Image 1: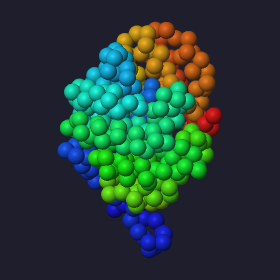
Image 2: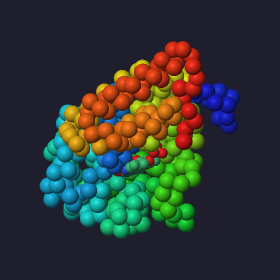
Image 3: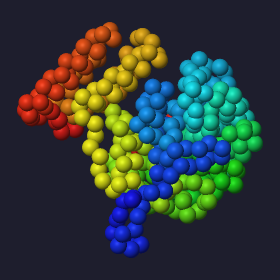
Image 4: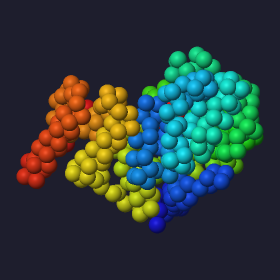
Length: 358
Ligand SMILES: Cc1cc2nc3c(=O)[nH]c(=O)nc-3n(C[C@H](O)[C@H](O)[C@H](O)COP(=O)(O)O)c2cc1C
């Protein structure tokens, strides 16, 4: 059915249907084109499994520093250790040296990555000052050399994630996408902000349309897709082949399912009820603790628990208690009490269960 908008293409032009279709990236077949964005410290194995189970068509690893990987860093190796199990996984690498990045891509391929994604969009000072991330958008020749070298060295598809440019005076996403295409990349994702904007303001989806019009490889739109309606609008404005969702899915992994439902039917799907949200959150929590062990798992789970409970009545107090809890059973108990109280409140129709988001 698809979503119908009244617009310049006619009164009831249908958008979004193509996003529900499978996509082929080289030999890799994806069931749909709503992807989970790479987020350092967040899109680890437990979160990727969850996003996939909620409908994400592709998940991307956290950014892995090429230099650390080729030095055999245990942390970097662990980031990709599950690649075979979660096929197809796109593994994202960062760096600025073509030889080092090529070697890192080879290692990731041998460990089971289905796709190598090159980070050319990270705005963080500590990354760009090494010449990596968004800094590569300032050196198109080097960017092209890196892509070409990796494409030649591995037998799996190579994709690139970029921003619109370094700043508003140097918007070059369309040019860089062309370079990526000519260097053998299979797909480009564009975050609709410049590096200098970091995460401020609104992502510019219309600027992504210019990138889409300049290349024949698929273009994935990214930035500020926080609801199914955003997803529909982003596709309408950008005309992209698919989308990538990051922060919108934090504490709300069911957003993928809601987006797919909306693009298919044009209708909103309610989020899961509190009881189901609790079950999803607990499964995620147990997976984190199981994967990392203690005390690391407990520490890493806190931010996710905060996102799940954000906006719920009493969540600020819960957060404080969670921060002081050092035992898994203590955390389980706190969460159980918190949700039980909310469910009781809800059953007796005693408002409010939800508070305004801080
Ligand atoms: C905490 C955090 C970590 C991120 N880490 C990465 C990363 O490792 N690699 C990358 O390409 N982008 C990274 N990003 C950017 C996201 O992939 C995405 O481009 C950005 O958040 C905009 O999309 P959104 O509005 O859907 O979140 C990160 C973003 C956040 C908030």
